[in-house]
Length: 451
Image (cartoon, rainbow, N blue to C red; front, side, top):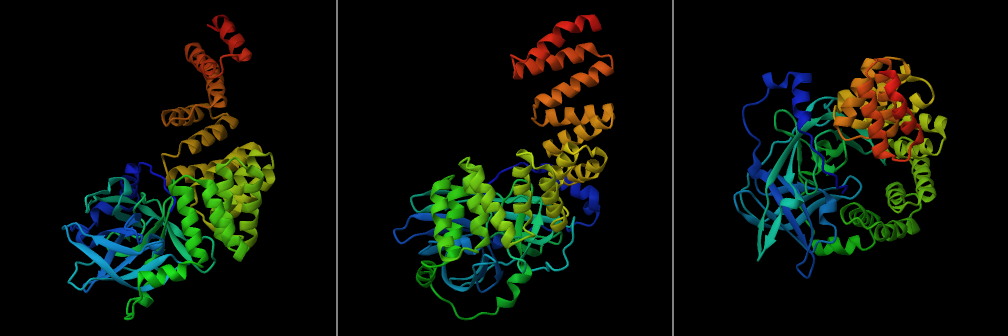
């Protein structure tokens, strides 16, 4: 679904420090032989999608996401040992929860062991495995893929668009192509199905959702699935989602979302992603309207609350933004972006002392979140903790931020610390960003008198 790639090398080491995991980790490797690359093709034999899956029963029961199957006339599974196996039928799909249980050709398969998702708690270790789409190569009937493994920890279990459908929120990165792959605990047992990729947070379906359906015996075909999906709102949604996030075509995505809403005006996810499509097109008023409708339908949708809060913040509706960010954090206490945004809005309201705990929690969860370092620097600057503020600003600069306001504050810090050369450097940086800045030009010409 959502395609974002971001380095998270640091997550593993942070988690080991938090949990002392190195002392208790299991010595064995994940059984990668049970993890399949899935290639979905249409009736003409054209690839319509790739994903991952994993075998959970030796006779060939495989689990993946439902959205991997959308528009597929056939699906083939490719295993690390070179075996290529047809998917012979579908035991079960759940369009809302986005999972599918599939039957492979007769054989004897290596498996992964299922764990339990109901006992997961914040900061539990997780890893994910899958086939990154960018590493999948098809040529002359042959397919090659490389299994990637990422690491992180649980942020919590929370619903998103539907109150009764929780997701595992985790820092473990899901790259494009991980959809349908396993999320594992520290014992290498499956606790979830990788489903939604995000910038700092990723969502997995709890494994408990599929356990009641593992003894299904009857199957149906992809032809039947295609027939059902002709009128399926969920199929339209995943198709639109792919157009938006996979192909970067918001106009085409809008067409799919509008078809859904013509059938069902209360389809929450269609409103949410329609807002994202309007956002990408720069149509802010329409985006705001769709986020507001999303929250009307699902008042505790964390991402919608935070996104709408961002719009309110930028338009000067500061109190409304604060309330939305607080609601997002209440719904999802480890929501990294909402915590940082709440810190920023509290700074804007002149409440830096209240902002600092939210920003420090953000950075405890993600030390690489540059904007949170900047927001923390603003809190510390407002409280005249200049040495701390300088460190926070310099850290955010190291990570790529380059805001004029930050350089002005660093200039003031260096003046107060009687470091004119450093102050001069900040003024020159300001003029590189804004060459016509008269205030910076004047202060630069006045600097020699300060020496």
